[in-house]
Image (tube, rainbow over all chains, first blue to last red):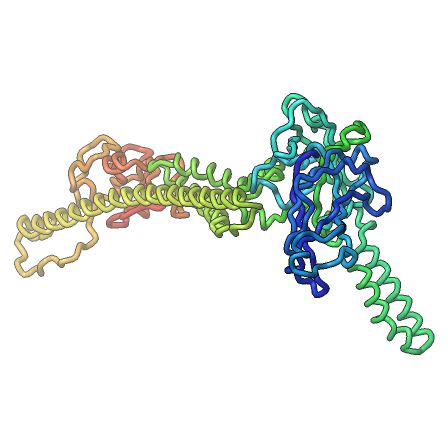
Length: 255
Length: 300
């Protein structure tokens, strides 16, 4: 929050190339909520550079002066729209009309004040964890520190911590309460004095029944028995011949 | 485990507990690197990887390779305690150490550089392998030392026997020559008092002696341990088995209760003069034998 960052604005033609030689183009930068038509207060946005696209490109210095927490914990998007032609367009006797330029919208941004950061030395992270070794006291140690936008350690703020288990794709693992346990020996959170804390988590037994793989394995087995039985009793191979189609659909669902 | 989730790896996201502290919504979250969750380590991998100092290994029981190293160290120390005066124990230590070497030879397989996670894990695997290799080499050196000690002990015993046998053979030849000379010059065997000059010369090889015609030996202290008069040693009736257990047992091993000392073996006679009194250990069978090279003591 309140730290300038650069936003690249490119003017693209229909074929996806950067539209150069069209003169300067003034743009208006505004904020909008993610997936919504309403907008946050516009004083949340500050521009430190002129909103002008020169020769098809612009590098805007943008600051967000408030956090997402204060706007309903919603993520915001930057919206860039063309407003009017600049000087370059006049000089070349043509240029592009603002009406011909579609507005652009950035990815959602969550504005924060501080950030948690794992305090693990490079190369010391174990890529494999054996959950049935070492007894109940064995846990994954996650030393964490609180830093600001410049990466400096933040002292004087106490932050309680929790953990969540994700797949590698970023999707949250279902049944978090039974799968991921925060160990009792974890610290209460980020310490006010040190700006650091340590979280110890343990992965408990994950039931194979909830696995997608196993569910489809059961379904396939039942389907196979059903179709084979139907083929035998009806004395026709038609249901049996439908099996590849069913299997291909289940394979697609697995993916 | 990861296999229950389509073999997907997991990540742990650390985030502020906004339920407990709603004002911490302005704190960004962080996510760990991917981790594969498994049940237990494969035993074969443990044996190959040696001493891995990962968190899991640190909190778990000692690995098989470490246990084997401890066994090798204990056997190495026991082999080093074997001295040249205890060949039976040396033989046992050699056999035990050979077994350990055969077992300890397994970690000599070079671990895979990527056996552990990251550079640190790989380096620790390599260092563990080097440590195992050094332990195996030390164990083999201890085995060789023990075998050398056993060999030296047996060799000194055989040397002692060889010396005694050579001395006894020389005494036999000397006794035979003197007996033949006395017969020829004195004519004791000629009852008519004339010297038989047509008697053929004595054969070149020793003949069985007529010990009954020989004069009784002078009394000597039993178990004198020295050579003494060589002629007195040629009489089997005067030979008794020494109470030393330098004899070999039926199994070929040296008796356990007596240590094989080189000096003692050189100075102690395997045969000693028998006291002519009652209770002397001499059998009738032995009396008919010209010379007893060695006796084998059968272990009951």
